[in-house]
Length: 161
Image (cartoon, rainbow, N blue to C red):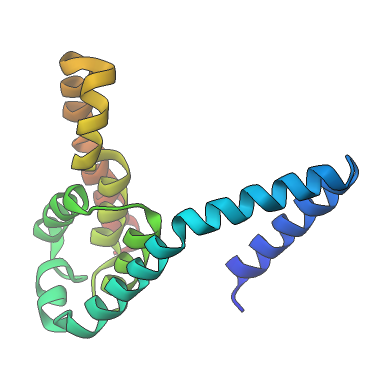
């Protein structure tokens, strides 16, 4: 059991005990909602881990090191921004993929860029953003947002190598 699991167990335990003070009906409602959420997302999580397992086995280590490795410099940071924009899915899919890339030799700065790009510039968000926020907002946010992953990657490269 790693530290993240222990922290999540502590948070869940605290919330369980805190809800208990409002009576068993609160605990029951929370448990039912948790079960419904689990049923809705279980298949997604299992499929994400299957994808991660195959990516781990099939990812060519030398290719990862060559393109986004620790010595890839600006080319690796710029490629990582593009890859981050293209990554589909939520954190259950993306973070395990990023961890595998890091494990097989991706550099610290490109992975920072990748995480930042995915979280700020995912192309999937445009389909939601445009109808609600409009073209002007989307273009301005995207134009400004393109620099954020590059700056994060550059800072990581200069501070931590």
